[in-house]
Image 1: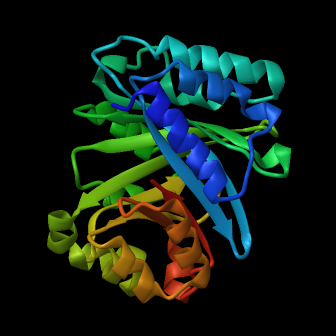
Image 2 (image 1 turned 120 degrees about the vertical axis):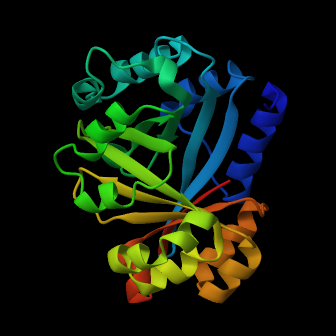
Length: 272
């Protein structure tokens, strides 16, 4: 857990590192950050070639047995619903009326602001523990690739939603593999995600594979053993520059699986 002052300093440092500043649309998230010393702040940037989108932050809330969504998150979503036409109907369709929030280990809420406002979005994720019924439902939801079910090896499970300011929304699921599972299921990985992705996964503590209903390609969210060495060997100028700007070695590197297999390393997300 970080204190409010530490979190605010981390937020400010991120903006300074990427030569950026907040916009009025960022105010509700900043208010939530100030009011959430119990949550963990995660900073992020999205890089597309030489274009960087750094107004990306997530707040991780540990769920201590709550039977409903954290009231702070509910109020945050309501604040944005007054400002932009976000549509949460997909969330309610997936969650249903009997979702067991007490099965959730962490709730994560985030913001991703882009220069093109209609492409900006709010994110809401849940990490569940022993909740096989929800896993089966989310992994089998219409539009999710069957590969997601094949990669569901580990007990932990992350799923979530993008609420885009255009009114669009998407369900995302993230089956995860730890290093020992990557070794054990190496042949399965090579069959599903390809040789190059598997080789990168072998150099990681953990990899989450992302699948979405919005028809974009699958992604790999990688936590390498040695971030500096991992990034240096990839050899992407944009990735090296963004990594240096974060000033952190504890980092998640997310790339599209198709890009990795094509040897294209110019579009990625960093989380730290």
